[in-house]
Amino acid sequence: MKEYKFVELETDWGEWNPFTGVGIDTQGHREIIRAQAANGWEYAGWVPSSQRGEGYIERIDLIFAREVEG
Figure (tube, rainbow, N blue to C red):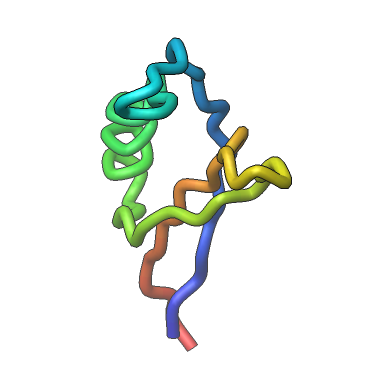
């Protein structure tokens, strides 16, 4: 059986460009993933946790999993 942990992360919006739209960056995700791995959690993916009506993602949840006894 697995248990899951979610860590919310803010996104950072770049400048809008008429050719490419707007860029979205995350800050600190690598450090969060490394820290969680050091505590026995495995990175499992991400999902948007807050999104604007236009589709812009404001926050994401990093998902971590680990095996539990039972």
